[in-house]
Image 1 (cartoon, rainbow, N blue to C red):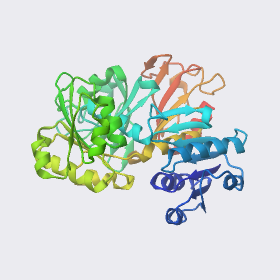
Image 2: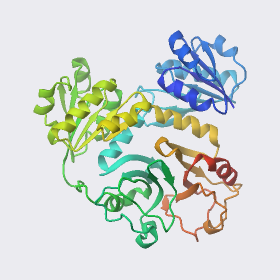
Image 3: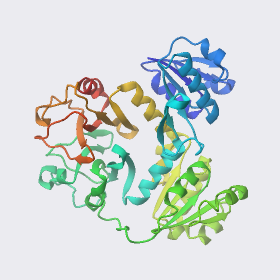
Image 4: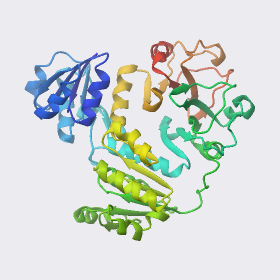
Length: 446
């Protein structure tokens, strides 16, 4: 596939890095320093403005156009130009941050030439919001318009499930355990599988059954559905505002926001009427103590500074905060953040990369979530009448051993798969898969 990437910042660089293994990639950036960094990859690099139509005319034919510069307008304009120049043949993806352009993490904007518009900041805020509501979770992703959730738990030493065979627990009445991450091993479980302390467990469940799943995999954490949660949010930039806006009206959340920029405080104070907004520097030890960081259920630090997020998180942890969530602009720093004491570290990069991968893997993939720690992905496939898998009973499928059907969504009803269930056209099938199984899966759903 021929791919053009506009913008060689952190997101563009990593998209080019991921795509360059099996595709011909051209990276365009007007900043010579960023372009030089991209030159380290196995890609072609051009210095210039990605919205310059004359420059785009010089490009060889391309299949996918990804605009991820820091300027929303350039991204949208360049996608529109790419659509026009290719007579609508190229797929286009634009990254945007401005809420005037997008109201949900991922949407389609064909009227401006954008097949997929992605807001990484809103995507990250939505993920953090889910983590606030699910006790014990260290990662959450929503599928099938919110009907299905992927949740990652860490098994504590006191968990009563430890050592018990799955076939004796009847977990498939509540959820599908899609994977167990044990050290560097990724285990796709069967009836004889079991969990051990410190295992990371990837669970797929109906949204309505999340309470039951929490009780199974994180029983030692305090139920908090009816208790008001004390949340401190550090930073009210794009990510912070999106997050605050998602939870501001929740009567069971007591939200306190610390923002250093006085002008920004004045901008958002009327937009977040149920939140307490404080002008101050959260790296000030006395301020954190006075505002009750040690008594907080969750401290979320999402400023634009990795160093500040790390420092604020570690100080809050030292004071006694129950859970720390920190943002890093460099995805490679995620394991470092978590190694030194941040409970959950997240980056905005993944949302855009997931959409790029979805468009390149298969036309039948509705959504995709990469799980770097498992070197695997959660894929949501749509079944058509032409799909080889249509009309087949699950137990008769010659399904790849490196993948597992985790949930089937039929109409508005999520179904936990069993051997007697038949796959029907218009079903959506959610699958946990290692890379080795991608080609086989694509053939089944083609």
